[in-house]
Amino acid sequence: MKTWLFALLVLPVMGLATSAEEFKTENEVTHFIEEVETPSELKEVFQLDGAWRFEPQGGMDEITKELDRTGVIIDKVVNLGKKIWTVIENGKPAVNVKTTYANALPLGVSRADQLEKFSPLQFRSVRRYGVNLYGVTVYDVTYTLVHRFGGQYEGRGAYLESVTVLPQHVEVMWGYKLDFFVEKVSAVNIGTRENPVASLALETTLNVSTVLQEMRLKNLHEFRGDSAVVNSTEVK
Image (tube, helix red, strand yellow):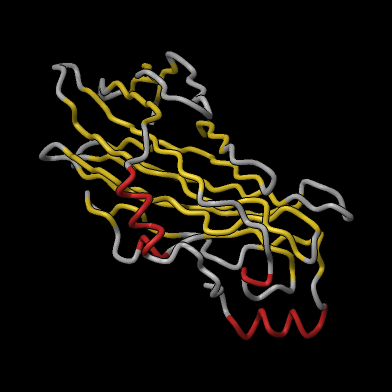
């Protein structure tokens, strides 16, 4: 897919951004992105649904064997959650998307409640939409990036929990199909051996298509164990 970059938008951490033209694809759809306020209802529902997700979503046998062999290694950061999942499928939120997440914890830990001092849930909502040559909005989607940061193991480190993407609002023009995926998750230590700081990179793809054309919009979101900030960049 050929794209022409018109403007680079850096979303602020605090406050709300105004709409900004991002780029135009070869089918003459102009894409926009803006940061929006997270509805209080979404925060409340997410809290009630049990955002503390202690159970690992990987293979328990593998985790238990690793724990038996090594014990806890605080400077080795791993993701016990998902690495790939669907957020929106064919214009609708995926089933069980509210209980799908990633994390960045010390190797050997099998449950997030072995850590303490996690922050309250952090929310950052983003709206993306595309307008064609006739001024018609062909897709309009709002999603929220969620995480907890600052978790410590025996008083050390800064780790991440409940990292996920929640769909809020999806509208697609007739004849268009919209899918939204988390395609890759990686967790590393960007601190030191003595004071580890977890970093989790989460790559998303927003795929908007017709029977003739396809638009793939990729973003890389970085979550840090020592910060409420989520840094997002376009991936070409």
